[in-house]
Image (cartoon, rainbow, N blue to C red; front, side, top):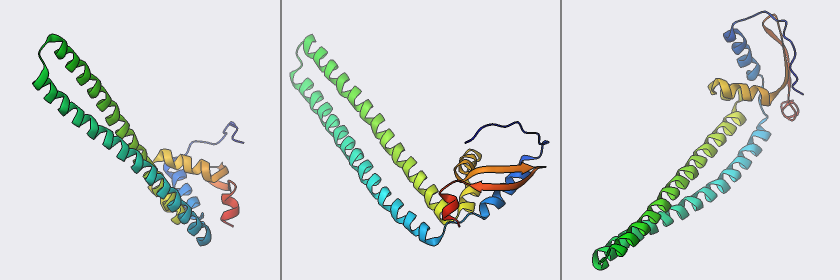
Length: 177
């Protein structure tokens, strides 16, 4: 599908071809019926994802709260009952275990919150694409623009620094007709 070919074209300014890609993306627009179905599907997926992440986040926060209470109780017990070196070693060992669990849970919480942030970003991109492909392309980073070009176009022919033809990938070609 995407085999490399030797390019015999002369050099041209990147901005020149970027402007042509902008114009090309202006021509891509999904029909409203598809856009509305996409919105409904994205909303359902987002709702399920959000429930999952919130459940995970809540579970981790409960575990962190439990560890904080256990650490506090451990200190109080140590104050009341520590009488020997063995008690001090036991206190240190249990305290270290609790602190290690706390570090792991905080890392896990960070990952869950990061995953949620990434999911929101993907949903924002999907909605922007559904609303207006050109606007999504023009606001994207150069890396994302490249991914969008690959996702939307099966083949783009460039001659003498001009885009002379472009073929959309399936099913986008079918949806945009």
